[in-house]
Image 1 (cartoon, rainbow, N blue to C red):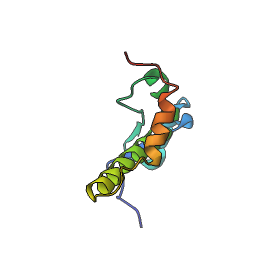
Image 2 (cartoon, one colour; image 1 turned 90 degrees about the vertical axis):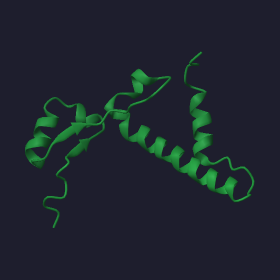
Image 3 (tube, one colour; image 1 turned 135 degrees about the vertical axis):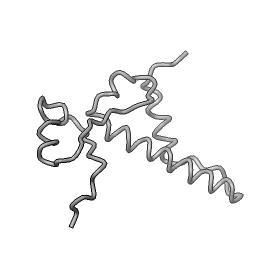
Image 4 (cartoon, rainbow, N blue to C red; image 1 turned 30 degrees about the vertical axis):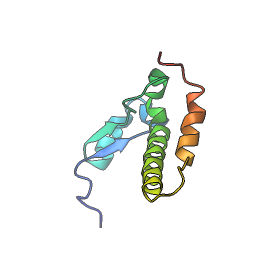
Length: 102
């Protein structure tokens, strides 16, 4: 079935990925390259959010923001009203808790 489909390797994420020896066990069990996920290109609470425990959450938020941008672009380009989507509202809400970069 799936033999040979993951030659590029696996990306391990979440708090459990920080258990000592987890990467070695995953490497032996999967028999493919393994790397630990770590959020990149963050501002504000970057030191806290770079922890692999947050990589899935940060990734999903980024995907939501990217998708929202594409949807807004499509709506605005089609002559529709400017859209303020869920991604924008979540982003605006979270920014209230982040320190100013000024």
